[in-house]
Structures are given as structure tokens and as C-alpha cells.
Length: 240
Image 1 (spheres, rainbow, N blue to C red):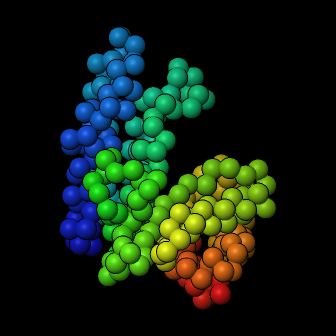
Image 2 (tube, one colour; image 1 turned 30 degrees about the vertical axis):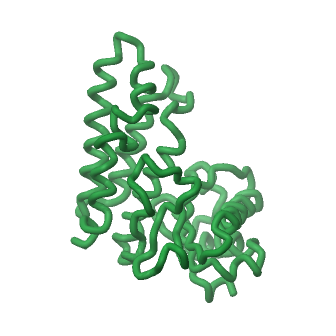
């Protein structure tokens, strides 16, 4: 697992440096911290720095699992909720999604698949809606890329399955000339709509993948769907 540091170390360390996603020199973060009430500004600023650094340490340490990093990411985000914990966090959603993509890359890596690598450009600078989140080891970026997306809507199982299919299809349409591998993270509230047994969950998720039009699936080189701590993976032979 030592190769994790070689592949992802520079990307992860850049998160808190320069104008990285978790740097106080990042305009969005500086503005967010600066909005804190004066009585809480100093303590929240210190707490943000400490949690950001711990998040980075957790990502870098292969002895700490992805759920540990996720806990620190959620802790960072929770700093910017309102006084009522039910209020949504003001933490930038695009930044959260990108950071979650790194957490899930580690989750997949620790399961033995080391092919996901950082996408082009340093974290926090590139426009990730225009550039892929992942490069694929051994593949040209002109031929195959990987992308990460959250699934956070759907009130019934069919709605959730359609949302998964739409997210996959959306990634394929974003990169129409390339093969695409998609990593999806299902919001915990939506995951409750899936079956309980692992084989039932697999069946529900595969049914979602099969909703993607067949002609578009031809360029889909793999799908990993993160549900809680589990990764449910599918390859082209699962969805011919």
C-alpha cells in the first residue's frame, strides 16, 4: 500500500497549502471562516486548521481507513452549520464533493484496486466540472478517465435507481469521446431505500446501472457505488 503515498501524496498535501481546498488562503474558505461571529472567529479558525490537518493526516496514513477520513471531513463541514444542527452546512459543496472523491479513492485503493489516480491539475485550482476527478493508471487521459459524483436525491427505490442511472449517463455525456469509469457515493439517507442483505443491494444497484441506455454503456468501463462503508463494484460483463 506504500504506493498510495506516491500516487496521491502530493495531491493530498496540496489541500492545505497555497490556495488548496482546505487552505485559509482559498477565497471560499477565507470568506467562510471570516463570516463567523467575532466571539467564535478565533476558536473556529483554530478548529478548522486542526481538523483540516487531521483530515490530511488520515488520508495519508494507510493504517487509517477511509471512514476515519470521512469522519474528519464531516467534522470540518459541521463547523459551518448554523446554531441549529439541523441546518445545512455552508461548507462549499463543490469542495466537499471533491474531497469525498479522494476519500472514496482511498476506500477503493485499500480494497486492492490501485488504478485510480489524481485527475489533471492541482486540487482546488482546476474546474472539476470540466476536468475528470481521476486518471486511470496505464491509460491516456484522451482514452479513459474516471469521475466521482454524489447521489443525494430520490424518495423511493425506483427514484434512487433512476438518479444513479442519470448520474452515470451524465458523466458519459460530459466526456463523449472517452471511456469513463464512474464512482458514485450514495447519501446515507438515500441508502436506506436499498435492500439490507449485500446480494439484495447488489441487485438493486445493478438494476440502476442497467437503466443507462445500452449504447452509452458501451463506453462505461466500470462502476463503483459506495454505500456506507461498502463498495459495490460492477464491470462491463455485468451490464452488457
